[in-house]
Length: 399
Image (cartoon, rainbow, N blue to C red):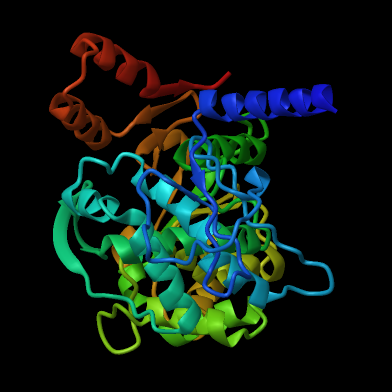
């Protein structure tokens, strides 16, 4: 008996030492009715603000890893999408704490983030409670101008609201991402401008049939896209996917209606959710071009649309149904000054680059903007090394 107790004690001491050495610090906190376990990093304690009268077991597999943000919302699509589950996942402490870890990256030196971080756990649990009770309301915005490269008016929400934007995006992005066409390249995992340029070159060489046919490129841009998005149409598109869950749709309506350029029109350029909503809004156009108009070589980055063909007449014919669909279904218009049809061998200016059959070079204005950013950085790396790295990335030769 003595030996068994001694063995048990040794095992307990080893387990305790393991957790101390691994520097894992967690609190096991129950809600007031002792029904829900809310594990949280105990960098700062909540003190007496929550009931700690129960002793709980902690499951690390259900929590967000502090370094790798390993918590990923689980979405079950069997038998139809249950958006009640999605709403619960959005407002769960696990999801919001992971969203906070992601939101903090590259923002720790900003004053508003530091003020929020001083009592982050308390504010996050307050946010969870407001969301669960329906008391949450989106706050106001601060406005500022940026030049990237043209002058843009950015609207910045509070840290609390931006944190919720990240929490919403983490859960809803996987739901909508699977519904979008492959050749949509903005604000998506494993996409971006470089992937879009690579796809453009693949399309161009297929159309040219190894440089034996001319390649005509139609470029189109939507006029004041974010400021022209219709709230009613956007809510309808979201509602069609999310099974008409009242709580989730009320939360999204609150987000969408927090900003407008005129009644019921416009979404802010600075919100992470606006990137999701932009792809949701233009997905009907993507589907119409691919399925109804049967366009094979089409890609889109945000509101920039590109179609390739060996026939200029075909591109002119496509313009009319595209314009009608945008005006009648989505209530937005193409920018007349940014609409062009040009030949690839003469150079096509797209997504910050100029593409030719033999090479793709970075646009001069893009190079200047990157140089200004490099000069403004306080880096230990020698400026000449940074300059050489920039130059090596500024040209893409066809393999």
